[in-house]
Length: 139
Image (cartoon, rainbow, N blue to C red; front, side, top):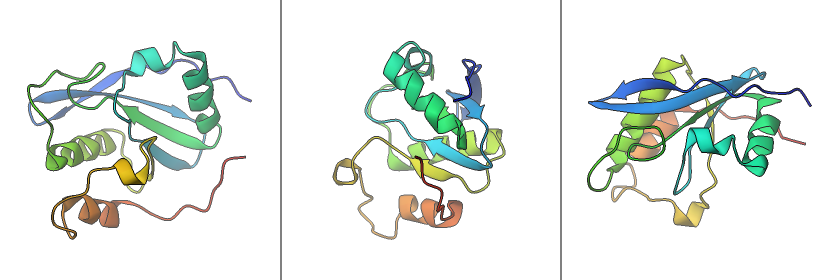
């Protein structure tokens, strides 16, 4: 397995907030890793299991990870984040790294993901226009 140096944390503006992100890996396909309930880019590399997981992903993909607004290295917020704000953050990170059609991954199980009140809402629209199918599997 190729070693991965700890990537530099970079920042992009989403509205008035700075969103922290990192890019690393050797693959031809972009993988946008959407964090679960809690995230902290710098601390992920301190944990042996998380570091090994990210290193394994980097063997197959150009990995894009970020801290959600209000968490980790991203700017703090007051109150809850709306679905539209989360999508704006995803879009800002994708644009910053010139990722046109990433695959998405998240540790959050599907039954625990928020869904828009409108089934044809922003999240499904965003995914429908921003993703492509990937047949690549990790071994």
